Length: 323
Image (cartoon, rainbow, N blue to C red; front, side, top):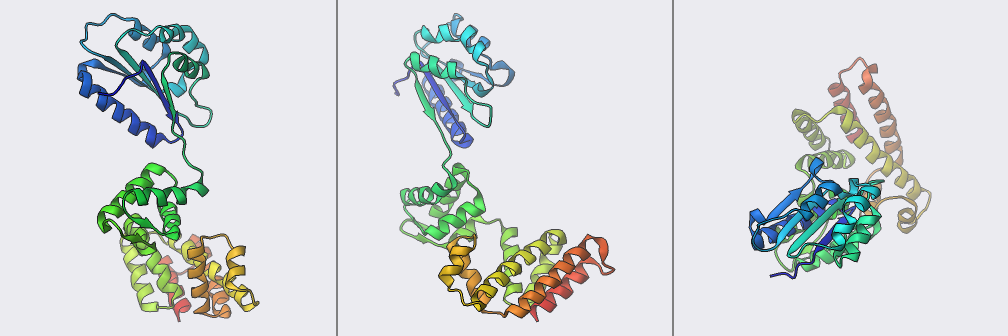
């Protein structure tokens, strides 16, 4: 059995981790005292006054009593001092109260509660999200803990696809480890296949076909996306952004810049820059400039300024760019 303290305070801006710890503590508490020995306070029921009254109330429960209190980031300093500070200083025997707070913006755990838990000999834990630049190293370490090796570029792609929430990243890493098995080296393809939604993979495949000037594949992919409900208004900017990126790189290559100079000058992950440089070398600058103009006209046309239907205009543009 765990050695229970009289008070716990778990808070921070990593809300997923705070929620996990809350669920885990409740599970352990119910395992020891049964559901009847656990009281949960959340929403309007979670106030310093109600917790103070509950702690001072007589109880006939057998064994340790647990109070799980959510939403303390909403509490006011004065209410904690008035209703709870003295009670925490003299906790009833065989009682544990666990406070949980989700820090966000101005909503933070009140300092008097932190001081009161500390003075009561309780345990305080802060679950803080890592900064973006720290996440790739963290993801590589978590992957190694799960028995797989995550390539640095693949780690950056995973964060780009999933976002910066560590719990979501960890779930994706667990899926990758289960699918590929211990000892596997996970690269860009493995991460993209698992972490990217299937619709996003299809969009990328469509744009890849367009850049590669594979007109037949690009048209087929476009029609499939439209049949699935993908909007022209979303696809056109994706096409234009990729073409503009490659046009910029192509112009730099033509001006004599090295790949290393280009990668230092543009804002994108190294693996993506390598791919764009390869794509730029597979086409010519004049064609790219014509495609940029064509897509700009297409974007205007998609706002209702063209006599052609959106699909007809887009398909004509795809064929022209791929030609």
